[in-house]
Structures are given as structure tokens and as C-alpha cells.
Image (cartoon, rainbow, N blue to C red; front, side, top):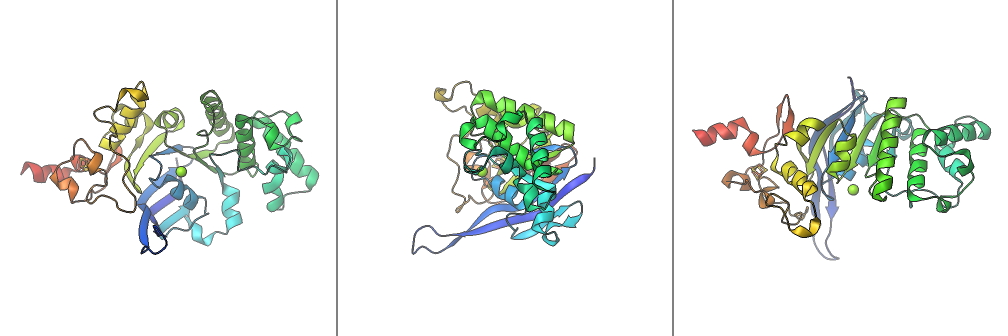
Length: 325
Ligand code: SF4
Ligand code: MG
């Protein structure tokens, strides 16, 4: 495999004010992330809402500049590439197919719109291409002249996927693409995305708060917590042998049979911390069942090994040695 996208020490901050006269505070939405996306893979990114995954997605799409760090597309710094060039190669599919489709345009013209923007062919050629891609996402020709409000949620998400694919991108960034859909429709859309990846040789960054969804589609998974990647591993390893206590807690909460039956012992009992006032040391320590003194003051290093990476003192050989000495 070769590397399509390289994310190097990327951070993004926002100045946030809480109230009219309050002093502005710095929100570290994404905090020093290193990741690669390999050609043909599905890199899952999971974490609770507010962990920075959508901010990361926007930076990868070139919709939001990084505050620091570099993102390179096949070695070329994205800052040096113009918006249109990036859009030809990287396309998004967002969560909400209701608000992302123009209600006054027909399905065919919505799907053909990127072709118009990029100056592809004449009207007829663009419509032909739109119809061909609509067919690929499982929408028959008769849908072409309908309007979004005449379609179901799943059908609208198929339209959003068709619009993303019409430019023949290499990378599709899917940000919670099934979260707004009924459970029965979710799996249809996931299966469609998997078929399209196989047929068209696509690469995905697939963002979700739902581990079960990510397990279904991803080849590798990065787990984010408060702007950082705390664990990365191939999907089978991550689900069989999670290392970070946060990953374990996320898995545990997926496995809890009925939500009403109480929080499991290793579950995420406490609420997600305020990102404007992140806990010192390991940001996960107030919720971590394994936390010890060092965790409250020292930020864990990210340790890389053949299994992936993990940022937890329990898995840092230097800390373990110091504790044993
Ligand atoms: Fe828990 Fe400490 Fe590891 Fe953080 S560093 S996840 S608090 S054990
Ligand atoms: Mg989000």
C-alpha cells in the first residue's frame, strides 16, 4: 500500500467566548495529530461528539486550515493546492442528507453540479454522467427528475454519495454518513459504500461515534479523545485486544445490552469533560478506571509499536520501568 494522505502534527484551535463579556478562551479542537491514510484503506475515526473528529475531517477536505502542522496529499502540501484541485481528489459525504441537498434542484442537477463547477462537458454529457453514477448508487433513472423531498432518507444519502463520486475522487471523507438514518437503512448504506470502494478503488476516512458501524467498514481505526488520537490499530486487533482504557470503555458501552440497565463498571460513567477546560495530565483521567497519580499531572506520550499506537502511561515502557524501579 502507498500513502495517500499524511497528517503531521496537525492542530486546530478556536477562540471561543462563553458569554458577551467573558474573556475569550482557546479551544484545542485538534491537538497534534499524526495519521496516515493508505490507498485503498478505510480509516475509521471514532470518538464521542466534541472529540475533534469533524474538525479533522474539515481540514482533510481543505475546508478549514490547520492552525499548525501539515497535511500532504501524496507528498504535496495541501496549502499549495487550490480548492478545486483538492475537490477533484477528495470529496465529502456528510451526516445529514436532508439539509445538504438543495430542495429546489432535481436529483440529476444536484449530482451533476460538481461537474458544472469544474467545467466538465456540456449539459447533456453532465446529465449522462450523473445518471450513470445514480445507477451505481442504486437509484434508477426515474429518480433523476424528482426533488429531494420526494425521496426517503436513505435515497437522499444515496444522492449525496452520487454527488461525491461524480468527480471520481480518490478519497471520500464520510462524516457520520449513516447517523441520521433508521437502523435498517444504515446497513444498506454501509454495504453500498463497501461495494463502491471495491468497484471504484476508493479510499475512505470514515468518521463515526458508533464503534459497531466502524467495525463493519473500517480496516484500521483511530480512537480520538479531546483532540488527540489515543489509540490506533487495525480493526480486528482493536476490537479483540483494545489497549487504551478509553477504547475499552467505548467497546464496553457498545456491548451493554440495554442502555437503561445502568452504566457498566468500566463504562463512561462521567460526562464528557468541557473541552475548554480539559483535565490536566491525561485528559481521560477523571473517567479512567485505571488512573494513578502520574495520570493527573503528566500527559501520556504516544507510543508507536507494530500493533499501532497508544497514548496511555500503562502502555509506556518508560513509565512502567520507572514504576518498577
Ligand atoms: Fe487511564 Fe492513566 Fe492511561 Fe490516562 S494514562 S488512560 S488516566 S491509565
Ligand atoms: Mg461531528
